Amino acid sequence: MTSGPTNTQRRGSRSSRDQGLDLRSTIGEVRQRAPRRLGQWAAAVLFVVIVVLGLLALFQSQSDRVEVLAVTGAVPAGQVIEEGDVRPVEVAGVAGAIPATDIDSVVGKRAAAGLVEGQVLTDAALTDELVPGEDERVVAIALPNGRVPGGLAAGDVVSVIVVPVEGAEGSSKQLQAPTVLSQAASVQSVGDTPEGGRVVTVLVDAGEAEQVAAYSAAGQVTIIQAPLSAGE
Image 1 (cartoon, rainbow, N blue to C red):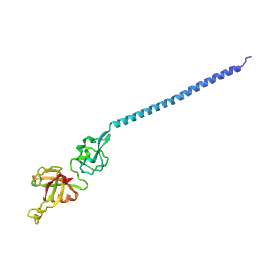
Image 2 (cartoon, one colour; image 1 turned 45 degrees about the vertical axis):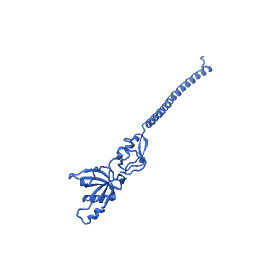
Image 3 (cartoon, rainbow, N blue to C red; image 1 turned 180 degrees about the vertical axis):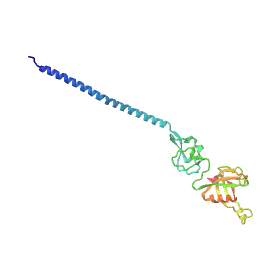
Image 4 (cartoon, helix red, strand yellow; image 1 turned 60 degrees about the vertical axis):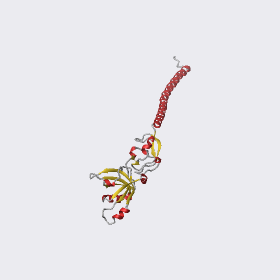
């Protein structure tokens, strides 16, 4: 008669199966933990890379900052730039910005358009030409050579006065007390005409422009060069 497995054998068999199950369970846990740890390491490395790149970008932006000129307050179009109108600021990435060391080349120029507080100055924002402001106009005056002061040039200040028509009634009184159309007109340019005369382009107040243009068209004006302070 064949006897069955003893209790000891059955216990040994179960113990072996349990050990096998434990081993497979352990291997499974290791396999599950490995991807999680790799993901954690990858996230940590990515975080470090992002921080380093951010610091490098910050350092680069700081190192690219240069000292340039900016406007201290609103400047109307056509106004002459004075030293108090600008101040040095540090910026990066502004194309054509005028360096703070070039302030001497800026003072005395005019605003090509209205400037706002804090605006960084560029060459395009400034001009050497006369620019009519809101209450100003540019007028061309045609004159014979004898009515244009010698050496007159852009930037000079002139007075525009009426001259009477020769032989007209009351002309003597007008000669004694001529009418002043513009006390301090700024000369923008001086050119020649085909007839041998001169054309003087001036900047005048808006309220004076129509009369200056009308009398000029009638040939009844002359100009007197005024002190520079008259236009300030």
